[in-house]
Image (cartoon, rainbow, N blue to C red; front, side, top):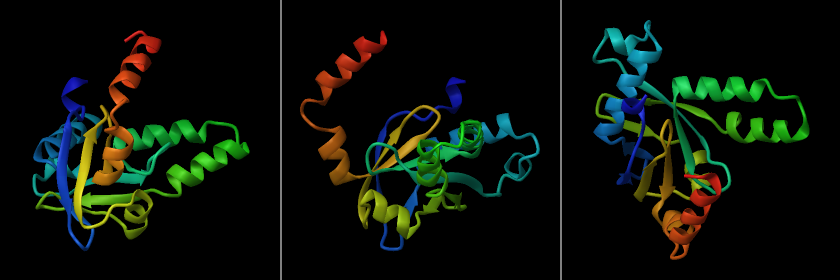
Length: 166
C-alpha cells in the first residue's frame, strides 16, 4: 500500500507547550489509512473529526516513534503474542508503557507529552520528522544531526543495504 506510506525528511517547530504541526502530506496519508483500515472510523464519516496517532519512545536511540492506530494495534498484538520473558517485559514497558494517544487537532497540530519530549531531548525549536514507511519519527535536531546525519552514515547505509540484499 504505497499511498499510505510516510516518506521524506521534514523540519518542524515545537512550541514551548509541546505543540507541533504535522505536515499536511502526512495528515493526508493518515486520512487515507483511516479510510482503508476502519470502515466505521469517525473521520471517514465526518471530515471535521480529529485523527489519532500513537506516540512512543523510539528503540535504539532517543527519539519519538509515531504510529497510525492500525499499525500500532498490529505492533501491540505482535508483542502480546510473545512469551512473557524478561526481555519481552522490557519491550512492553518501553513501547507500550511509554505510549500516548495523541489527537491531531483541526489545525493539524499534536501535543507531545512532557515525558516523551524529555525522553527524546525535544525542546522548543526545530524537530526533524522522518518518514519510515508505515510509521514516522520525531527527533531533536541536535540528536538527528549527531546520530543519523553523521559523516560516515552514508557508508554504513550502503553496507547495511548490501548485507540485506537491497
